[in-house]
Image (cartoon, one colour):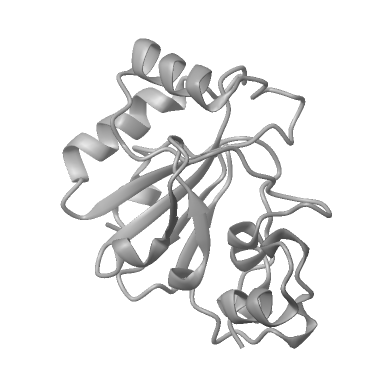
Length: 180
């Protein structure tokens, strides 16, 4: 049963689904996300490309990583799509609205890679994307949830989770680049 199917069967908010009946055959491509401008999508639009999923925040000590995320997007966009998911879970470091986040990212870092609406990466309100990323029964091997802002997950062209990178691993670090 996929996360999407579980949500439809239970007629509930995807953030509140019970993972006990969900198998690791669940696909990341079925997960619904909302773009920063409010459009609901699934990650299926990125099939065939690697994805680097990053929980981002505007008021964090790691916020300057936006510069390297943008460079990664510009230099390797044919190999990987960078996806930024604003998160206010760690120290309240993303307090702004979607409009404020967009303005901040464009003005300060020239961000042109896709950004999404704020979501929760942990706790009872954890978004289904981060449930999938941090539940080994769903993704096949990883149980590491973000420990702070700017943790990174690399997804393969086939939708399988390849690597988890801690917040301290910079976007242009060799550990990431060699995986592209």
